Length: 501
Ligand SMILES: [Zn+2]
Image (cartoon, rainbow, N blue to C red; front, side, top):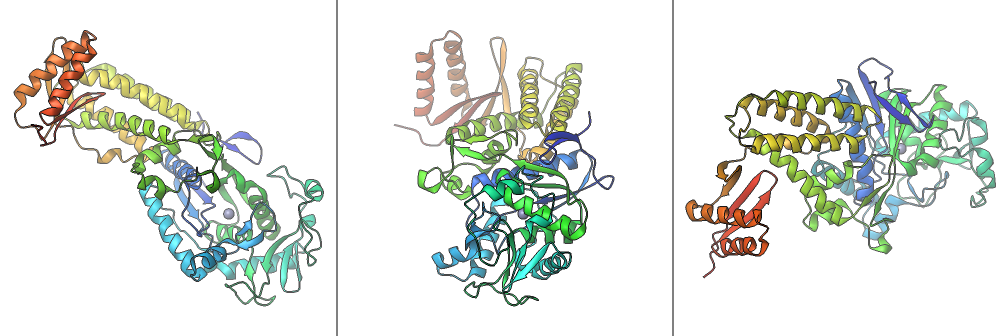
C-alpha cells in the first residue's frame, strides 16, 4: 500500500510523494523558550519524531528543521496580530533576568528534555533572533509587492491583499470581519491585518531595520527559516492544532505572497493532549512539564510510550494511571527482547517466520495509513504474545528463530524509539514445574535450592487457585530476603540481602 497522510489543507488523506525523489523536507514549529515545555508540547514533538523515523524506516532521507522561538511570540497568540506581552520578556521580568538569558536557559532545557524523550536530533534548530536579517528581507519583499505596508515604523500584512487567506483554517476574512474581539490598532488599515515588524521603544530586544528600530512578529520567523534551510516549498509542515490559526495561516500568506509559490505540500497537525480529561492549565493543577513527571519518579521511556501510543489526530487523555500501564506495556516488550537475546537450543519452527512476515506487513500497513500507530502497536503486541508462548513453551525456540524475531522488534523500534536495542539478555534458568517450563531470573540469590522448592510449591497452590497459601509462600520468601516478581516470561527472584529475623 502507498504511504498516505491526512493533509489539513485538503481535509483528506493523500498519497505521499515528496518533491524530490527519495528526500523529504520537514519543518516543525518548535518551542517558544520562555519556560519548560509541557507534555502537551511534547506530544507534538514526539509525533514529529515518529513521522521522521517512519519516513526513514521507509527509506527516505529526511531533512528536518525545528525552529526555536525566542522573540515576538505574544501572550495573546490566538489573535493574528499577537497582542499582549512578548512571552520571553514577560518571563524575563518575572525571573529578573535579561530576555537573552531566559531564552538560552530554556532552549538548553528543551534540548535536555528532548534527549530524555529520545527525540532524534533535527538537522538544525534555528533561533528567530539569529535570523532577523532574513525576516527583514521577506518583509521588504512583501512591502514591495503590495502585500504589506508601513505605518509609524511598524509593518503590517494586508490580509485583504492575499485572496487565499483562510484556506488552511477555513477561517476566511469574512469571519475575521465579524470577529469583534479584534481591537482596532490605529496604525492598521484593517483590524485583522497582522504585524510583521513592530516598533515598540519599551521592548527589551531591538534591531535596526529599514523602518527604524523594532522587532519581528512571531509568524514571519517560520517563513524565513523554513525558506532558508529547506527552500521555498517544503514537503511537510507540522504543528499542534492550535497553530493552524493564526500562525500557519499567516505563514502561508507571507511565504506564498513573497515567493509566488506553494509553501507547504502536506500540513500535519496533532490534536490536543488532555490531562485527566481536561485541558491542561496551571490553575486546575493538571499542568505537567516533563520535569514534573520525572521528579515524581516516572520513567522517560514510559512517558514517550504514552505520548506516541495514540493516533496523532485523536485527542490523547494523559493520566498518571495511564503512565503506569504504559510502563507495564513497555516492560512486556523489553522482556521479550531480553528473553530473545538469551541462549536458545530449541528446534527450528517455521511458525516464527510466518509470524514475522505477518507482523511486518501489518505494522507497515497500519503506519502507511496516516501513521495509525495504535493499530500498529496492537499488531506488535499480538506478535509479542505469540512469541512469548513459543519462547517459554516446552520446546523453546532455535537460535536462528530468536534472532529473526529480535531483528523484527528492533526494526520496529527504529520507529518507536524505545531503546530496545540496549536491552540485555535475560540471564535466566529454566525449571520445569509439572507440564510447563518456567524461566527464573536470579538476581543476587546465592542458595537456590530452597527458594526453588518454595517456588514450585507456590505454583501448585496457584494452579489450585489457593491464593492465600500461594501468597503466604511469597511472604515467607520475602522474610527470607527474596522478592518474587511474576513477569510475562517467567519469575524474577531478587535477593535483597535484607533478611528479616
Ligand atoms: Zn511556526
